[in-house]
Length: 331
Length: 83
Figure 1 (tube, each protein chain N blue to C red):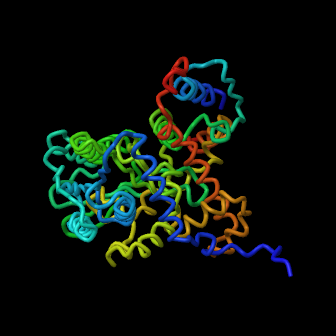
Figure 2 (tube, one colour; figure 1 turned 180 degrees about the vertical axis):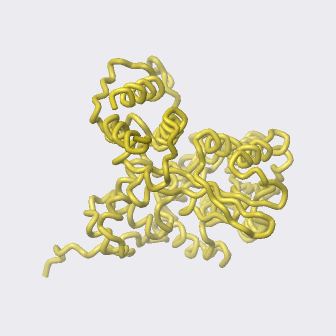
């Protein structure tokens, strides 16, 4: 009997041999680091699943003495993030420190600039208010745009579409957070002669969900080829703490609670993973629609949005453009 | 109609293709398919339309049928302007 009838698309497409994948990443890391002439790795520990898995993989590859974890909370961080990052560091027995980047962000004007831009739309915004940005449009076949959502101290929620000028001001201000964290990571890496690990999963890497020269900057990216679903599988395999394994992906960047799907992706991560896998494997939109319980139109919008985000964020991956290649240094 | 198109064409050429006349832009060309305008660019375009023509683009009007070519924009702005 042949097995030539294709299986219907379902989440098993993302099944991962965790033991084999862990061994593969370990080997890659131990081979890569000496080529960089680095003695270990530094990484930021957000308390989320991606950075926790990267830390655990690094410990498996290099041993705990060659891995350094940094918790870098700021004013808008969830209080649980640094605590959870700390617990991961304790479990993995790695050296770690907490660097509060809030005062530096304050000095740079990050919060002031963001709040001034918010007040253009909501003049009463100030102390005790919270805010976040939510994506809209692309999931329904429209042009992607962003809504600013605010919550008053009394708990009233209001939202408005962000005009381009205010959108850019808020993004520029909040990107300070990722860029400052990376600056701190490289400071520790320089001090220790270590390399810096970047922790994007495939969804983030492929769709450009990172800040250029911020969380996008790194020397090694051990899980950039793995779908988020697979990263969770590795987290279970690596026996990370239950609240890490069961965590919901958030941006932890804005003061209101914000899921990554709400900010950037058109579907919750498990569905988005399957959509990206299906897109990458040439699965027709109708089959994706059946697997996710969406209309075919909606599945086609998701595919279009995947392609649009790749185009829009290609520059985030790109090296600086040169007039003439400098081939002697591979540039 | 032609005035709208000329005004928008000038904005698109100046801002998105940096006045590069070699990049010909036909009235019916899709900005998306031609990779002329990305999602941030559409937000700039919408801001320009609102400021220039005194219209308000509703959230549900942020669709390619209204914004994704000079022809589409001209027809959309004409519909939005008082008769």
